[in-house]
Image (tube, rainbow, N blue to C red):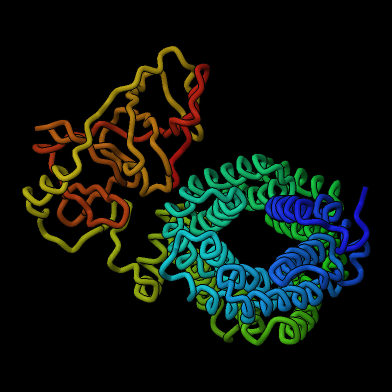
Length: 577
């Protein structure tokens, strides 16, 4: 039987109520929260009356109810719910401060910051988080500190600062492993998956997104599962796996529709529109983003609405509807200025400028070259100067992009700090006239001896992704620790499959020392000026070698993470070069 007033809630029942409310908050379970709160709060369209409780209970109930309103408003596109949530959280903060409950004050402030985030007030959100974080610098294992740092990642995502975000993710790795809050574990792996995707570290992204789903199911949160599926769809799209992307995004949309989460549905529709646009299904993409905008317009998620406007602008430009794109950008800039701030206006203005090209009345060949330079420059900037990711985005090979930068636009090499990087092809890779000293090379290897441990896969079916074997090819398979293939974005111990063949520039190769059979892995390269052979390993200096010291085992046909191996089949995936 439901209790009608706060006076009727006796202490034993109050303790149960608070514990159940916290668990529902942990799982973001809207319906369960409504059921629990109905014992003293029958009409959520009016603020709860908690005046009959002692001060500390008042504050905790106001905190719980305030965040509930914020989450409900965001999930179901309810107008003014963020404002009401902020009001209840502010009242909770004031009471906690009077009682000198620093941890609870900080927890409520972190939730207040989320309300501002949901409204698109990025600067205010970040300001609150920075202020609150100061209290926990000496206790970085505290759950509230972890919550604050995870919330900071959301603002970094909006700012497109993936480098700083990855630093925080690495910093939080151990504290999160020690943390007992499954919701925080879920949030951590979700954010890690997003930023590893944006950084081009797709294997790490896939691992963390799978971990998110595992933890989300553990706490029985279908909303977290759906949010992760949406992010998985974006990751699939980045990797060019469009079939999987559509499967993931449709499943996410279905879950949100069943939950009636009209605040989350437009975010998935935005992702779907980006996917369709990537496939050049522009009319369908336009229809999809229009649907997303109509959802956003009903609530307070102005950041989501502005993002949807930006997606629509990209689609309109793809359809060559430039005037429509310009008119919509004016609307975007006005909304961003009013609801988010001038920082947002500048952000989208810079993005829009990158999509435009102004003719300079040059001869055709020079005009084309100028436009080509702008495209390459913009892609390098979007991909953090990664040659591999830029080449993929432009639809050309790694070697072709290297040639373009070396022969046509050397000034871009200097601008993006590429002059000190060796080229992974058969052209000139170094100005050195002789290899580095033999002792230095051997010392480096002695610090991290890598012995070959063969693996017998004769009882399993071996399948290759994007690699064809002939009947004459001889292969060897062995275990490689996680650090061996880390330079290619592989996260985890793996089995490497190597096809024995002669040294071939531009390909991933395994070489082995003749003296102690320690092996090394990297991209093969040859200096045309000197004829010296090199192995380029990640960001390290190129490693010179001669046939007297080393021999080539062969080219890496693929890898398979140990955790994904089955008894029946071993699927070797191609390395991302």
